[in-house]
Image (cartoon, rainbow, N blue to C red):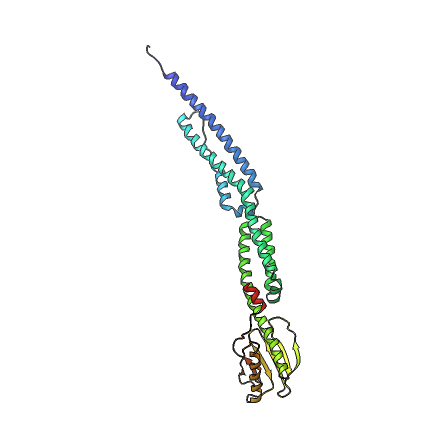
Length: 308
């Protein structure tokens, strides 16, 4: 048969393309498997705490590890093999990115997150340490809870569980900030009470009344108990709580002289910047005089420190 024949040349070209594609696919497959092997080794070094703290990134890496590589063989056409090459290259790129992401978590993000949380934790501890005397004075039970919170956070940080440690740290910061406000208020009231007590002692002395007893407090919230002998009207006991002055005295409801003396006490306390208005409380068989109105005294040293 005469004529030029081209079929043999065309078949050889397809074979070469198929061989080239298969060679490329084997190379890509080897690269992908090698990268995946490195990822698996790195994943075994990652603690459960880190996996939880960077869960979205870790889960992304783990999903990529499950991507199945399409099978190929020599019976496929070069066109089919090229399509598979395209898919392999995409998987290789994603796998390389996953490896970089994992390395960044282990070498950079983990340490950065740890440093940030440890810094916040140490700042909080320092702030609380500076207020230890006030915490133990007013909120001792709550202060013990704070110290237990320290232990929980440290344990989570040691496990590299940054997610839960941050939550616990946020909770502890909120808890202590609320307590700080409470102890500042209580301490300021205590400062005012002490100022009123000192002024009251001076007034009583000025009126010629004799101090009989000053009862020690079992707790700062307990009232200061101050007992004096008035001589003319018997014994009077003052109870200075954080908010008011209460008085027990052996007087009758109609004892005008005694009421006049208490008005005198109020007048003398004004000289110290303390405003009071004593009046009979209820119809008890043993009348009690209580202070009404707010105490108006100069700013205490504690308040000035807070404003500074």
